[in-house]
Length: 180
Image (cartoon, rainbow, N blue to C red; front, side, top):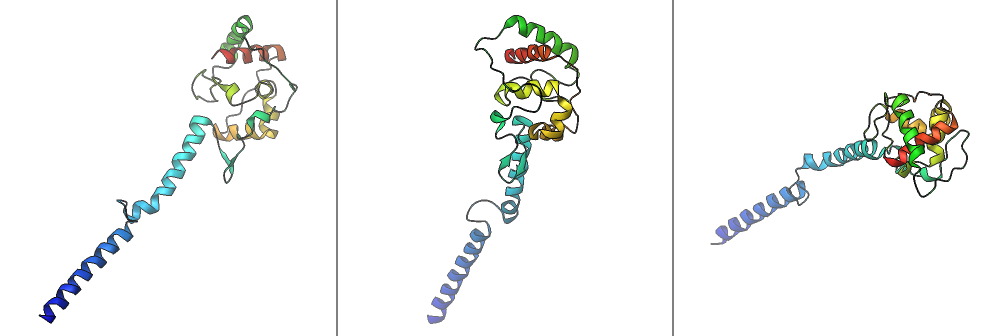
């Protein structure tokens, strides 16, 4: 009788230890130890890809991005301050669209990533001054402006060609961007 209860106790203890080892090894959920180890890296890669492709964000240092303070960055160039009117100037935008189609579409598609970024919604990501300076002064921007430098990296080191637009033409293109 004593031997039988000891055997039952040992069997029960063995089952409990096996169950404990199984759940501890799996973290108490349905993940295998391998999944548990791989999950953070997979998430990090997904976040990085999402940052690069959907929002254009890129990590400069842990947790910080050159894109984080875009709303204070006016870029480097002749345009220091630019206030846009509440209403879009449709005539100006039409002229800007014409210029964009002639000079920019080999690298930019209005609403999707191409060789360069899509201008649609650009004023939700950059200041008007920054956009103007990027159009007018791309060589200096990619050398000195942190966002332009990062964009160059994000877009496979394809520098933006200087189309030698005048400030007035660049302003028309910016107005067109507001219609996208």
